[in-house]
Image (cartoon, rainbow, N blue to C red; front, side):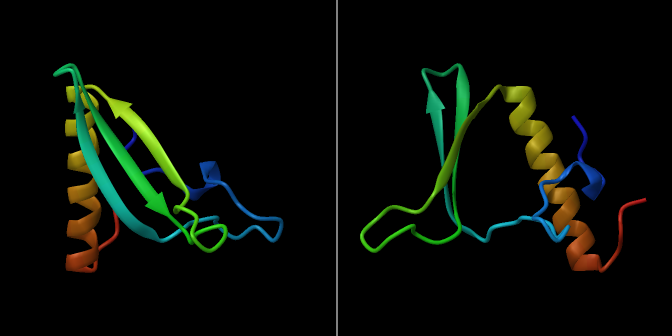
Length: 85
């Protein structure tokens, strides 16, 4: 897994701008002690009284650790105002 990727692989709109959505909430889960779950609620509701759009993924222990490490790396760069090498 790549912790820092170039934006060439990211989804873009017709004008070439990155498509990103604000994170509204997240929840985690453990599935039968075998895998972890992550639900990311993003964007805005499609209509009043509708739930937020969400992505629900399952990860094994190694993927969870890799994701945690990657997120910590990004947080450190933001806090230290540095860029990845």
